[in-house]
Every structure is written in C-alpha cells, then in structure tokens.
Length: 325
Image (cartoon, rainbow, N blue to C red):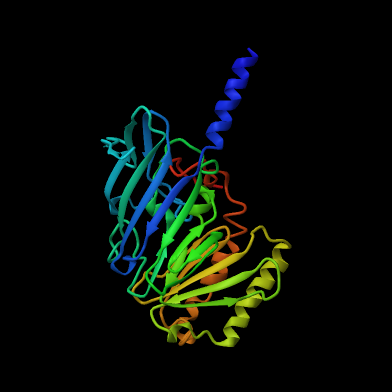
C-alpha cells in the first residue's frame, strides 16, 4: 500500500514539475501580418491531444482565431507525425507519440487578419505589432493552464523596441528570451512592439513601477504633451488611493496608435492593450471620446482580473466561460 502511495506521489509530482514547454516566435514578418512559431512540448508515448486556445480572457467568448492558423507540422525525434483534427471540437488535434519519444515538436504559422473580417482583429501595420501569445500556441488538452510552464522566445524586426509585462530573462539584438511563466501568465501578457516606440514612467521612483509604452505609425504620434502625461500619473495615484493596494509586480499600459487598427481595449492583470487613433496625442481634443479607454482598462486589473466572476475563472482555455454574476 505504501509503495502505491509513493508511486502516485511521484507520478503527480512529475506531471506538475515536468520540463517547461519552449515557444519560439519569429515576428520578423509582422509587417506582412505573418508569424512563425515553434514549440517543444514534453510528452510521453501514446495518444496526445493538443489544443488551440478557444475561450480567450478579455473576450469572454470562444474567439480563438483558429481560422488564421496555418502550416501545422508536428514531429517527434525528427520524424513527422500524422495529426488529425477532431471532428467535433475543432480546436483539438490528435496525435500518437511514438515509443521512445519524450517530446513533440510543433511548427505553425499564424496569418494575422489583413482587414476587419478575419477571425483575429488586425494587429499589425508596417510600423508596429501587437502580439497575443494565445494565437501562437498549442498545449496538452485538459491540463490546467496554471500548472503548464512555458519559456517563450521572441524575434522582432530589426530596430523595433517592445513593451510587455512578461518578465524578461535576456535580450540579444532583436531577440528576447522571457522568464519561464505559467501558460495563464503568458496568455495574459501581450507584447507591443514597433519601430516608433516610447516608454514613459508614470510612477517615477515608486513601487510598483507603472509604464506607458507607446508604439505608433510615426514618431510625431509619440509626442504626448506633458499635461497629459501628468493626467496619466494622476490616474495611477488615484487608483491606488481608491483600492488601497496593488496586486501586480509592475504595470504596463500598452498603447498602440494607428489609423490602420481597430480601436478598443483589452484588460490584463499586469498590463492593458489599448488601441487608439494615430493623432490621439497630437489632436487630443478631437479624441476626447477615447480619453476613458486607458483608465477603464486599468481599473479592470482589480475588477475583472484580480477579482472576477467565478464563471470567468476557468481552469484552461478550453473550458467555457460564463459571465453571469
């Protein structure tokens, strides 16, 4: 009996502390709206189902852009594997891992929408890109996203700069290695990058740090007037006064300014994805209707991410979300 208990504990521990998934994303063709991804996924011999994220936080809907997934190739030990898409759950892909293999390798391409109407919104221009990690990954089905660890690597177009709440381990030119995090944290940490980029500290010298990361289609669009910067700094101070505490390591406002992108916001735990017109700062009077976007998404870090309805706190990205209170 004792042997069986020990064996179960070893099995349980091994599943939780398995080697992390390694994800490498090549975004050097982001201006053409093409992304290439490679994944190295620990696995055991036998049937394995890989799942493409379906229920996306912030959307609260089965909006995973699977129609924009292309070029899926899966192999083990250098040999290609036959994969089959599930006939009912179209976000699931079935494979058989051969004997002797301890991992599978996945290659895929993601074709970001060129116009409104793709299954993903337009997320890049010739000058900037918003990278959502859920668009580039497959993960073992039925696993809790908090328990799956991922080490992500990203390659950007030359001379592009970036902002993200995802902790950085190292940079080398246009290549970034991020620290290992859970799948939950990865999906919750988009990257904003571009050739015209500016970072503004919103809580200088304070902890936690707050950053306004701006990528735009022109250098001129980065010219945030000092009086507006001070208003954003007041937003940070007033939110802390309102809630009395913070729950994040640091916070990044990821602001994309372009007339070629749809304009909206998405909340995250340690960041927000905010999209507005290119002249958001240079003609702010004409953009007053968008003035609430950044503080609105910021407040969602407390109300909607740190605390949320039980039906939205799902185990992974295949479990349906329920938004009723």
